[in-house]
Amino acid sequence: MEWRLGRPDEIPEGGRRLFRIGGEVVGVFRVRGRLVAYANRCPHQGGPVCQGEVLGRLEEIVDRDRSVVGERLSAEVLHLVCPWHGWEYELETGRCWGDPRFRLRAYPVEEREDGVYVTTGPGSEGDRG
Amino acid sequence: MSPADQAVPLEFTPVEDRLGVLANAEAQARERGYHRFPIVDVDAHHFELDSWERIAAHIEHPTVRRRAERMGGNRAFSLIPPILGDQLVAGRIKRRLSADEPLPGVLHELERFEREMRQLGVRYSFVFPTSILSLGLHPQQEVENAIAWAYARWLTEEVLPHSDVVRAMLYLPFGDPEASLRMVERFGGCRGVVGWMVTSLRHQPVHHNRYVPLYSAIEATGMPLAFHPLYSWQERALEPVDRFLGVHALGFPLSNMVHLTNLVVHGIPERFPGIRFVWMECGVAWIPYLMLRLDNEYLMRRSEAPSLERKPSETMRDFYYATQPLEWGDDLRYLEALFDLCRGATQFLWASDYPHWDFDLPSRIYDLPFLSEQEKRDILGSNALRIFPIEAAPGRT
Image 1 (cartoon, chains in turn green, red):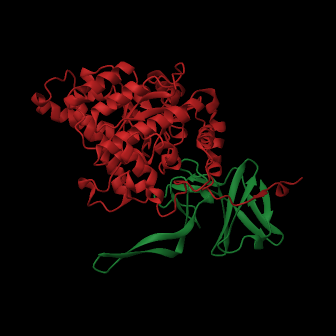
Image 2: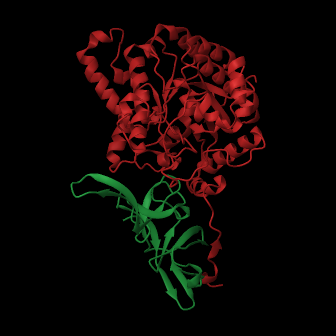
Image 3: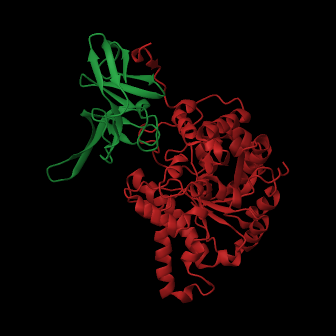
């Protein structure tokens, strides 16, 4: 089933909006210019993942001699973190950082001239890919 | 009306709002029909420092009371040993862990606790403290005694009488067996008291003869004795561990395993068969490890445990274990075998540990495919209703 969510400019780069679609809450994020939509339900214990932090993946900096020399938050890879237990997912793909067999339930989202549309129902991806 | 008109924009809800954070839990409770059977949470927590002034008012030791009343903003660190560690992973996990909302009084706090229980689908909940779980490390015994007594008075006089669904296993100042005995004698039979709790983060030998009168008294109450663990980064064995992940994973079961080993090897459960021992907050995967390990040593060194009539694993199979945080196994066959080995259907008790960072929902048990519907209901509630006097007639206040 297709749902109209509003105008494309209502979700700017780095932005997020939540919608109640039928009996479910869906989070829509714009990352690298593209919109992604996920069910607000963590594959772990069902937490409100779309209400969690978005931040860069924490990376360890390893020197040429293989010593660990520091840490940084990635500017390239953004993560969405479930606020219940901290499971982290790549915002662009919905793939779980700790165990890639788990993914956020993703819904196809499309930008048209007259609005943003998301499709729910059979065929959407997740929770375990 | 076309479907495109039915998507409802929502305000972004910060999950620090304790009602918002459990909306998905409420949905799970409805979907799974938790109202059809009783769920008992044998380990939920509150933040007792939010009510510190009320608790401190019950401290009877004059100098400890003066210190408690004059601590001001430093109250958490003056009388209660601090526990190092970032539980919330630099803000990734969202939980209210301090008094960041105005609390007009204890009833307001109780009302919120009960509301969260309903959201989780829980019918009865055992309330445990948070900060004073480290009190067993305090070097001044009179401090542990005074705060334990005050906390018990506050609970039994100001909290439990006002609730039909909240119960408590009272903190015992285990560093002082006589003081613990006085607490059992004073508070046994109080409304809402369903058991006794020893914090495992402590270094007393639990098998020592000085605890015999206490164990006798606990046995006479008929109420279970729980060991509630905690980690300490200052624990010597954990000093080289530099991630919270490691210190938490190792520290909780370590503190329980030390005391369980002493109890079992010295035959305390055999000398006090009327005590039901409950081991909290370590998940369940540590149990078979210790069963097999202790049995192996026992068979080779039988003379060091001469009074035992059974292997350690057989005694351990009679213990009860709170399941939280239930391990997340890649292969459910391991978890199924573990439930079988530990007689989980009768000995496991579901617990949430809510609102702490690694809490479990009832679905962690309810969604396990290898359990029957009856086994799920037993672990989620019936086992606890069987061994705790949860629905006994209200006692005195």
